Length: 408
Image (tube, rainbow, N blue to C red; front, side, top):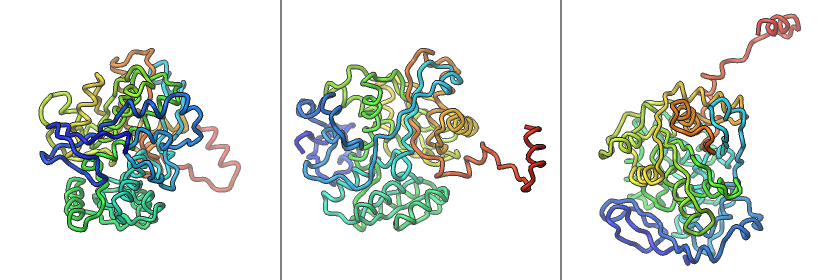
């Protein structure tokens, strides 16, 4: 890979060849992929991107750690819509608001970006089975992308995973194991199984390549905004891989000369499960928490990738916000009614945090803000019905309709 120099441990600094199957440093630290930005800048610029008709995440192939001859997987991942929402901005109390709807990806979440890279790297190692533990979205994205690429997938999910996500896994033909326990229990079992059976490891906190796929969401945001970088980007945070990827995407663009400034991050976690935000605020080592929130995809009580996330928040001069389940459901409703965007609880947590930060005066009213919706609401319709309510039952009688409408 001409664009990649090495993989470097973020704790001890030890460097490794960027082999397709690398995981953690020998010290236990997470690895970061280091690029040759001079080489990348010679391959891609604003003009070449403007001429590029490949409107998927692979338009940023020069920034991705894959071999030159590796084919992209079949599913269309990336280039999700970025909506300007003046109506929601007015309600929140900010001047400029954009909603990045990554629930429009093939399996309806941002995690498709990571899984697409995982499939490519699995092919590069010659593996025919890919495995991971997940609260839902990483699992469904892996299962779908693997199925399209002709690979098998093995998934470990905590027993609380929503039915909509389980349905996706099973439809995509994955071998699914519902683990009686927490996400941590599922992760531990997946790690043991991956080592025992030699499957390719898609766990994002272990595999450094997956964050590289996630960073393409930032590259799209910058390009879709005409290279005018927003002041703030709001992100839902679970294990920390997504917010770390968002930050690296902007940093990569600056290093290659496509942008000249960086945004501040808004790290949003559920109040009932916020270990990364708590560690960021206190400066103390991360302490595990209970997974007490309806936002299952960010209910990670023992994050496996906190270091990159905490570093990203601090480097960006970011804000940490915790939101209640009630605030998440309120954001879910507002996004639907004011923007026509249907997000799952974890997917809209970033918007809920943005609303809270604006209310508390943490964000200037004239700021340009992007909120990333990371997953589609059809993945968890039970939560949607909690805030949306039930349909009105009626007989096929116009007089009954008139009475109901008169009382509304």
